[in-house]
Length: 639
Image (cartoon, rainbow, N blue to C red):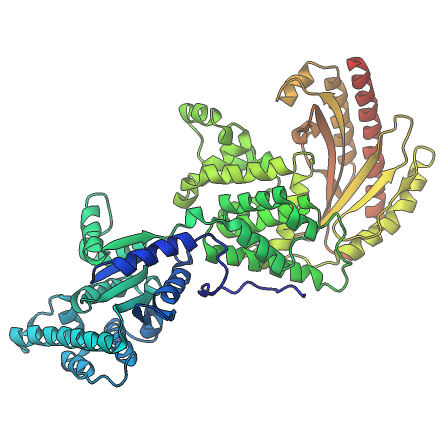
């Protein structure tokens, strides 16, 4: 079956499989409503997209649509009634809509509800709304007479009450359930007025109201009445809410089981291989990354999945790019791409930091100064150092950046855990920066403001093939008797890896090239690495100071600096090789990294650039041989 390219952002229908594990809450609400006294108003509270409408769908099916259901349903979407209307007209439309929906359940019922409704508003929309909600309308109301106001509202309530009783008797039902949806999509003050009219007009026997509401919307709607929300007036806000709502039910977003939903959805869009779908540990890693970032809000999850699907489609429909290789669908690559899109959706400000410096483990004081971050006082620094989430320099830079934003500040621990999860998953690879940079290039199509101008478009597969064809003959000529250079790749898309024929030390020497699209042009980074020193602590500099390798590392730095000072197109990626050292199992791995920029794919043919590239790789190879000898000597010394 052809995978779907999108996840529809519509509420779950009653008959659909419960993938988030909310059925037990639905069953509890059904049992409560069936046995509750009336009138009662239940508020399904949750942020926008948390699944309130989906839950109401299942409640309606259980309580109203089944063959032996005890209730009649009235469903009103307040957003639809308020479109293209001013505040007063929107509220009138909603009241009328509720009344007409009641009558529609039994069309042959004779009643005066609509005519009474018209009498309430015969003196104008504004006056009628204010009368219903109990607000003071000043001198204009005096012309009606206070008795006329009371009789009109009372008459409307009585007509509604009589109509409801008559319909329930004819239908043999216990009551009406009013499902009021999308209150959090309309202007907050209007939402508050709707809540007030429900209390004043529809608070009737045999009536159950189920509202989809966000408490934050109520707070904003009450600010004109009570002022800006604060600790001092919190009781006033809460009292209003408690007066309207008899049972608040908070959507259990934090307890949603997103694993099943993610697996099914990622499978539906063809994002994972069959082996990855069956790999419980890998799927758990994806779920953990989402839990720490996007969270469990269904709407946010659907946006994540659609972004991933679009990126897949863009990659697959590039007719000049070959089918993805196994390496490109490896767990590591898929996870990093997945993590970057999660960061893009959940933390756009952090995503912008990755655009500036993709290797987050290299965020340092210099980077903090570039971001104009405030310094950390000594006491705070000590406290941070005592926590696993902030005991490294890059984590402290992250902490300082998040301090500037209320939302990020409230989630800074989760954000640190998010990035540490990425690092722990790919700890056997020093190429974190390149992997993230490639993922950033892919994800730019779904970023609202990823770049001030578009990235340079280029055919990665064609560029790498061309580079391989141009480079190998020149390298073999330059190295001649030292080594033969080969490339065993059958497909090219994101990387080119060349291998140097094994010498007596039997190490596999290689260099990997990765092209990345940027706004300035195409960045080609290339690197190699060698494990040279057994770890005795968690501090490389400390281990280095206690070994004979320090002098050799210093000479390698000098050689690379001297070479880079003589070339035009190529520079080293790190100030010193030890800046990018990483720990793998029981040893320290030393990388040698370079990068260059070209304006477009055609520039790779320039002889001057190719000559520099060949010279750089020869220099890299020579330094690898020195590191190889060090590694052998160190291994022998430990035997």
